[in-house]
Image 1: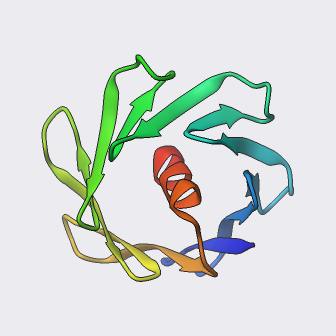
Image 2 (image 1 turned 90 degrees about the vertical axis):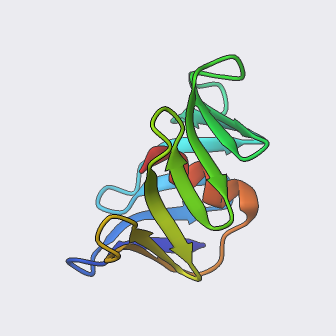
Length: 119
């Protein structure tokens, strides 16, 4: 299990337990990571994001590419601008270089892509 903390306030925002991204405040499942898909609330929920080949798409496999992730950088696909930089256990705001989120624990590749999808 990994906790995702808001660096500004130091509070846990999300935690990822196996295939579930949960709200820390209420402990409810917000998203479910199902292979290369992020679904709302459960395994049978609506596909919110799909990721493959370093791309994160909205609304499934044929959806529009939203983010591109490569070389520790998360880019907005439409404009090509950098959004986040992944530095070890920190996700940094590329514009200002400040730490946006801190990952307390370890994540698999699918869990990391699922996290990037929702933030």
